[in-house]
Image (tube, rainbow, N blue to C red; front, side, top):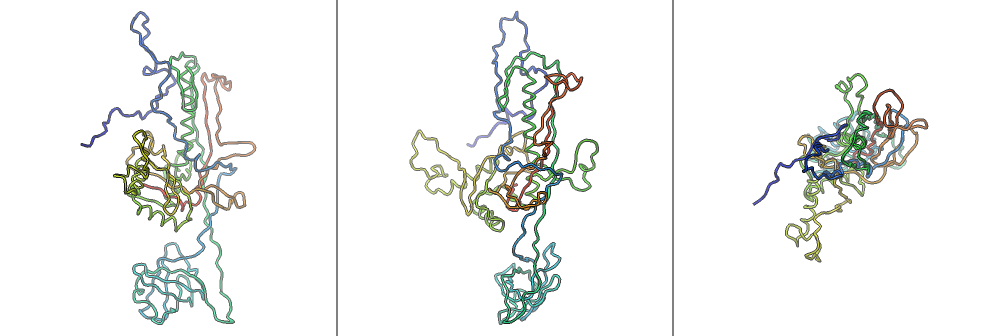
Length: 464
């Protein structure tokens, strides 16, 4: 009989760090005449392990300084043109036909007279080859090479057309007209991220009873030390989550209409960039080889990057393990996983770190997608993982005015000779060593100004 996981004990979704002592963390019974005083552990037990999630961008990207409010770069467009929505009213067997381009966003056909074109029906196997005899606006006229003229299925159907060369007679003039390169220009703006921790001078002088620790190694018996370090760790996580989650504010939105010190125009995070300019897999996770064949087919039509990293939640990671295990026909359920020298003392490895299917895929569990206080367990807007191409990309940096080699994914932070805003922290007040004001407290301030550049987003996948 299948079992089920009980809902208790659950997990805390709120941080417990406070400026003052808590009854849940400190001894509250100070009756020293009581012979049954509690036996307490001096050190705090870290029941949730390492709680930080900021490791994704460190693995796949880099941090590069920038001294501008606007970051722009140029990516190359396609070398060849293919129209996938071409129609004609010419009749079957016609020697010539006028073709009309109806692709979205196209204002003028860039084919030229003398070029030879491949034509195919999008709904059938019929195709033909022809030479272009005239071009005007969104139309081009062709003369078919086949004696039978236009195939029977072309009239009234939607066709695809692309040029594969040209043909001219002896002594003829050259090809008329030329094509200008059409680079794609993208831009992002950095956002200012702030955080603060404050503790009064009186609380700093309070006795602590429990030794506290944090993920970055800070220890001590003063509770405010733990709270300050946790605020720092929280800020580190915010820096990464802003680059992953944030979106650009749309015209007329409430965010743009905010007044005062908060809000701005936003910035393009990773998820926003891939959903807008990249590839989206929806309706569940790819769990079969045929699913990944579909992904590989799309990658073939993009940059065809040889190595790709998959950052996944737990369910997606397990589904890939099960898919790969199922390829082993010698083990029921794939439990042998290709190893035939197992013994009773060996722990069976039921997981895979990667596989090759047309391209190399390396998978990693992404803690951010599993964390119960963040993306883990949500129902709406679920992201199961992302595919990030490995390596670098040549782009034209419009601010620097030259070509540069950049990782597909990297952070640009504001910096100059006089100011570095990658990660600023400073203390104000009159406690804890600070002597900047008459405020009877210590305030620890955090600030960063940064933006994420997602180059070649057409090579990324997001799985939803």
